[in-house]
Amino acid sequence: MDTKDLSSLSPKNNPYLIGHAESESLIIDLYNKDKLNNTWLISGCSGIGKATLAYRIIRYILTQDSPQTNPNNKNGDGPLYVERTSEIFLKVASSSHPNLLVVDGSANEEKDPLTEKIKIEEIRKVNNFLHMTSGQEGYKIVFIDNIDLMNKNAANALLKIIEEPPKKSLIILTTSFLSRILPTIRSRSRIIKVKPLNLNNFTKVINLTKAHLDDEFLSYLYELTSGSPGRALDIIKNDGIDIHKRIKKFIFHLTEDNSSEIQEIVNTAPKETFEKQYVSIFQLLSFFLNKALKFNFSVQTESPVGKDEKNFYVKLLKKFSIIEILRIKEKIESLYAKSLSLNLNKKQIILSSILLLKNSKKI
Image 1 (cartoon, rainbow, N blue to C red):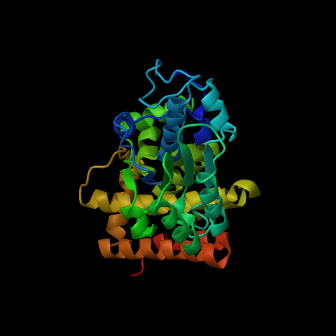
Image 2 (image 1 turned 135 degrees about the vertical axis):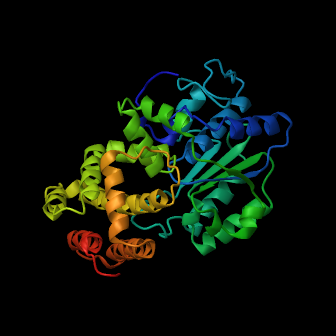
């Protein structure tokens, strides 16, 4: 594996995948036995590699169908690896392969996770594509990313397709919210539940981006993102490392008179990055309140608890009871949710949330 910066690669341009060899081996085994299911549903948290796995499956199957290419993996980069200079890889990356149709329902889940981005017109295109006689021999593959973003009509139309799929068709679906998918679609799909990476594999992925993070911050990112490299890369790409460190420092000194520090963070943030910082502040407040509860019950965490962090938990637990901390956390998360749906003054929401933690009155 080379060390190209993967932080700039989209899933269709990324040949690598770390930590999901078991799922890849299952695909190869069923393909070799001619028992490959027509519909696959890949589920797991956001940023964990679902779309990357889907594109590796797509490239592998199309490579097997192409007599001009050698499908053998010579680089040791996983069972489904296809060389990035190959004709199949380049056609998939450029969305020009005649036997592949991609429907991308991706959206900013943090801003509006319920937005319906896939409508019935796009599913009709899927049906037409699968029944076309033109194209190359072999599998016709449809990839629908984030199917939880389909509206009801689109979901029902997709159900009809997967109930009676054409021969040599392969439909690959992904979702971060398996419970939102129609039970009838789930029951007719072979489900792959992609698990969070362990810390070792998570570190391998992040190190490929040449981010040069120390072990302590890597462990912190791992715990913060629940083992999701994609979410960690979002933080890294959006200059979030410095912001996260500043917010962490501020949170750990909340018991002191440091309100001016958070005002400085908020007021000096460039307009184009404020939204990301706003999300980060609430993400970290919720994260460290959760860790305070774990600390109280001596629950082991992935990232080490430093001196400042430990002092914060000790002071917080002296100031508030467990029930009060839970109520503070609920109020902060409620304020955050309302600010997104009602377009409230976000700077004021931040300060109001901070005051909840500084206020010694009963909540």
